[in-house]
Length: 146
Image 1: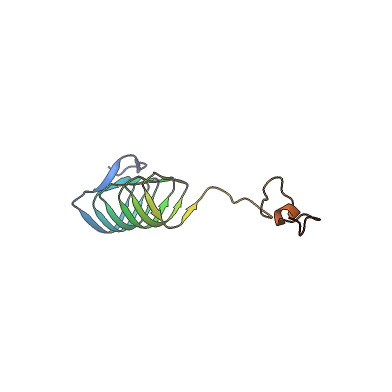
Image 2: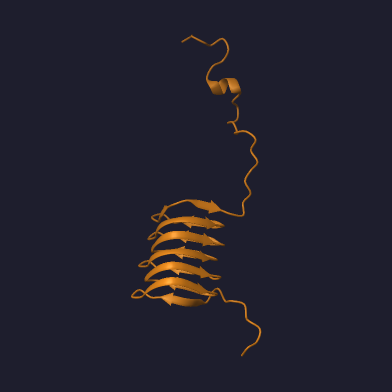
């Protein structure tokens, strides 16, 4: 009964907010969450979050993977993947490792993708075959001729 705590089962849906339900507050759990109704506040889980097609979510969401088919407004942090499916509407600033938006899905906001180091450019790359002179559009001796 009071033994060692088991690791969370992130594949098992632990909390469901049904289509006729509404939730306002801070939802925190170890398993996955499915939302088909209205939710306002914060959602924090070690598992996944599934937002159904009819759902309306105004919340900051932190989870492993997030799949959106409904409407979301807030901040989204996915340690794994965020999927915006064809019926989804998302207004959010997001931080993710992997991002997918299906055709028909809507996203407005800014995205930060982690786990990829920025390249160390010292100057802007130039298209191949161009020199500084040809890039400027003039070649010595061609001025004023038609």
